[in-house]
Image 1 (cartoon, one colour):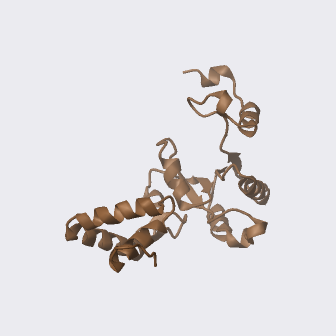
Image 2: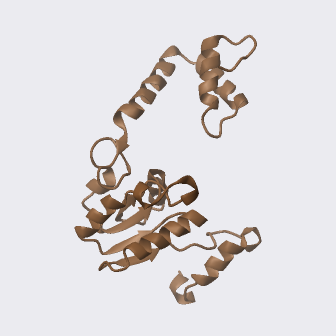
Image 3: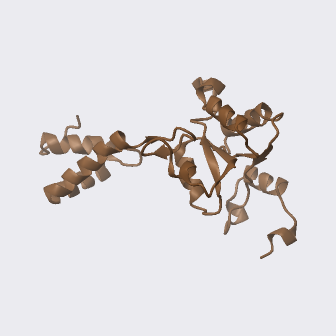
Length: 206
């Protein structure tokens, strides 16, 4: 437990737990802890109930592996989405990021990680058996949306090779210069990728 002079043990415990969260240092944790203490007790009780319900009620979709309250997630339950179009991502949070664009109307499949021999993560540790079953039921296209890291690229290549003989299209999300980005702030890998994935001018014109 964090030892803070003049801080009661219960408050120190709250500060310690808050400081263990990513992106929250000791000073921020203390400010948050003091803020909670200054609020009505009902606020803290509601927060505690929400945290308790987090693990009790939130799990992962039986089909795609995304966040779900029970059984299947809202994306797999949406009959207006194209179930034959699957976007492969590494983690459930990646689905939430993809959804921010509001342009994709297919389904998802969460791999549960990416290939990393150093960390002992091989194909057996990914949710590939579940993906195999979905492909067997009929899939028209797989979109590889793994990260632009060495391991992410290795995972994308593995998946492309694994399913290259299946009667489906395999595509990769494009990477390059972001909207509003300036060239002087981009790394050479991003610029190289942008050049490789260039498109005709008339295809980009609004």
